[in-house]
Figure 1 (spheres, rainbow, N blue to C red):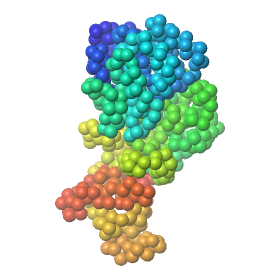
Figure 2: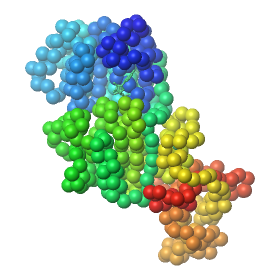
Figure 3: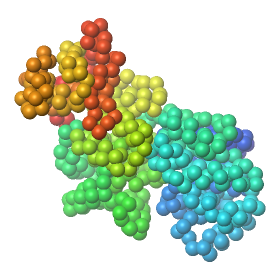
Figure 4: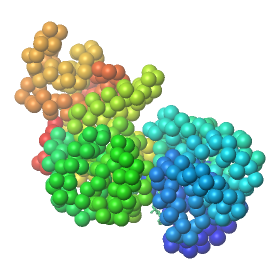
Length: 518
Ligand code: ADP
Ligand code: ZN
């Protein structure tokens, strides 16, 4: 079978060899073993179910959340000579009946459906006489409340499987690697002793950087002027922000499109296609754009705002450089981004435990924006992989600079947190270290602390950055509440006791960043 799989790979896809993970997943599925594949965006998940689908008897049902993309995917397969179709709400009832008839007549190996479709009686009935060899669940993290894109309709997958006359082999695919999500996928999709395939999350061709305190508009205009011939995506947090940036870029004459849930289907599809065919170079979009889009030559992804967590960030940034050529992932961080994400979490999540969970994930995202260490190392350790200490291809590694002993600074800052009894937020601690005379500092009597004014000669922003870096590197933590409070972590104690030293990279000549020196 595997020999056959290889010849299909060459014949239908034109590829000579499998990418990491693909062969094992395909072997499992052909052997009738359920699989859970956790692979980063761009790693090549689709092929892992498409290819076995061609070799298994009957059809493979592909569950996918995005109706708007099914047509593209199916057209793409048809171009490669792979018989595939889709059934979704964009079709009339008559068309659906026609397609189901064709499916029963054995014309297709792959049938794409949205999860909602599984609930309908007519669909169930139509499938009852059919051999369904495999069920492939794409974007499987959507089944989990802990994931970043929960879709209630994914919960109809399990009862659907239960009602099938014969249980197909089930394959689940996602780019989200956290433990909770993984467990949820296995339990909620009822995977039976699945082969779990986690391929490396590193994408060596991507470079990462975070720019803080930047004039975002100016940065984007300069950047695009440099890269005007290259396709790229700019993600912004809100529709309003997308519209504003889109208008600005359009006025400046860039070949720009936009995408968010507030636009008509027609407009979205049109601009998306123009982007796919390189008629539009830059797509300004909310996070509604991109899931499942296979545009391999995206050269950069700029985040105009910090996203809500690392999963979302890595998935979106990972849309660059899918062809293996270099891709730039730039995050423009602004302090307001934190407030906005908190507001959005507050509005959308009710359950207190979940809210806290989301806030914790947000803090990890904020830490990414402040860590002075290797950004790739940070990402990989977040996803549970071995840490690289210096990748040599990220904003922090690339900065000219050297590791400097900052133990004394750290001690001063940590002891100020301690003296303030670990009951206040980052801004107030910074103000005390600065020796500010503002009302709250005076009222609370902090001007009499021995740590008051220890950094009197520094800019307040630099002191805040110092504190944020201590959070990002694990010496301090922020509580997950509306008004986060700075606390010492166990890692801080040996620093305060003078039993260890703290080193951080200090940049000699700051290039773009306004606040990256301690
Ligand atoms: P994912 O779903 O994991 O984000 P895709 O399935 O969209 O990724 O694949 C990303 C790109 O990699 C596609 O352009 C695909 O054709 C290509 N690709 C997949 N497998 C291989 C392979 N074995 N060799 C070369 N390119 C591949
Ligand atoms: Zn690095």
